[in-house]
Image 1 (cartoon, one colour):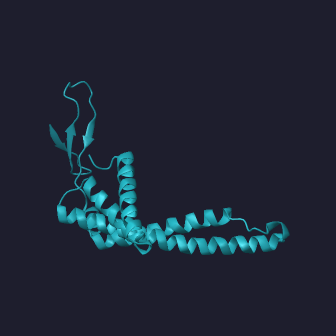
Image 2 (cartoon, rainbow, N blue to C red):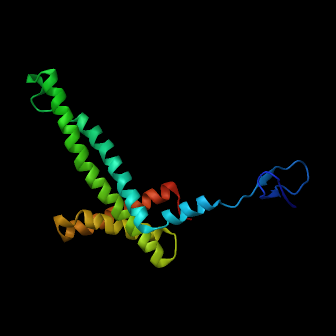
Image 3 (cartoon, rainbow, N blue to C red):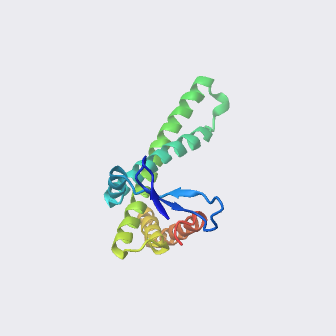
Length: 170
């Protein structure tokens, strides 16, 4: 039951076998541009860079939010202009700090997940656990081996929790 439409040239497949007015869904092959975009994003370096940039953007947003909520201890003795300048400086410094942290975290997680996925040739939760462990361990490694182990376990558990909530892998 396939036919072609003159506009698209893609085969149409009838839905529903009862012959009672079932809808027709168009099946269409991806265009060359769509295939090229998929090939580009399947590159681990591109995924890592994109995740780093997006993580940095998230960090700027979070830094501005938390910087705006921070009030100085001596706020009652400051003028409105001094309070505004203090808030702007706090937001700027927090934004830069959180942007760096989130960018590094996103890049490590995405890059590790991509490399593990390519090495195993599987798309499942094990990749997420490994990426979470590497990310958590490397982000907390400066505090010592115990902190690195706790960071590994905590970030891996958090990553699996998020995976299960969004149900990306079956």
